[in-house]
Image (cartoon, rainbow, N blue to C red; front, side, top):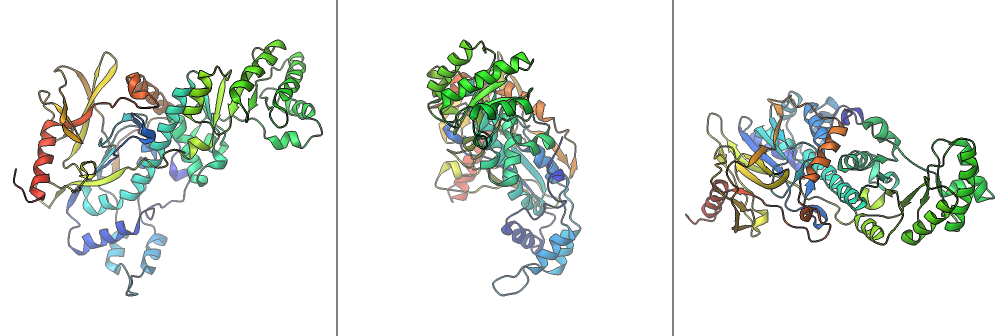
Length: 490
């Protein structure tokens, strides 16, 4: 399994916000280095106004926490930082502390490709408070973006039906790192291949592509350009036909295909990249079929997303394969997942875990205390509900789950319903114990997960809300802490 240590340099410890480091220093100065904390990474609403999110990025997380170290060059840089008083931000003894720091945390996470819902713990970190705090920014970066893209890819692939979706977004992605993460997450979400050759090498993703308009423009005649490309790529030839007149381009491609067939090489397909794709694909199919080229595929590309693909299919578009770029790799209509990393419990040396809560005038931004786990219930091959519970309070089956934002909305799960807990151990005392699945397994897991969701939850517009709620005991504890924190005893 290729992971970030093969892409980046040896140290990513400084991939963090400065305030994580200043808080770590302040904990150290306050004598709290032996205090423990539990943090939970979750999100508040699914992206794209959808009904679900696909968890992704755990392979990056596992690699990051396994290789977490401050290098000498990292520490030399930190020694140069100054505050507004022009004094060093960090004293030498703290720099020495960081030099000797190695993670001893426990990390649990939901496997990649799993369908997840608001307030559920995608990652749970438990251990020394300084270490747990230092992981915040990086974990959010790694999980937020890849989960966003995997979700977008899953929606696009759903809209495409049985037709493969190719990720064509390298040139529009947010930098080299963004392009690689996109290719990986899009493959988990269901895309069949990528145009990104480096992603293909690093992650063993199938690579696909055609040629550009510049190839056609470099020749005096379009048909000559097609023939030259077919001569160079006789076993891998897809011709881009819309450089000039699209339907004439299809006729030119058909003549080249007939000559290729005589030489024992079928034309794989043609690509439409602009114009009225519904009309052009229908007319192109007629031209190809009349030429006896029923096996030639039609690929469509050009600022596509799930909504346009669904519309084109409803219009009867004759498209066998979809190439999706900009709107996938930029998550065009919802560019951030909005995941958060919240402190939920602390423990002083030799003491018991104490719940912590952050208040807000918005219930969705009021953090949920405790040591979270999430239990998924299944009946007749379909997911029926998720229960977020505190491991210390338990998950008694005779209590209902409560909607996180509306305590009047409750659901009781019948006793005996099949279930499984979603968080799995990744690190124990800083040691990796999780065998990261191959990308193919993560992709297959995503497909299986989506198959277990009711179709109404997967609707692209106005989806049904999946019942994911707090176990009644956790909800009661949450309410109690809110009241206590506001100075009102329940």
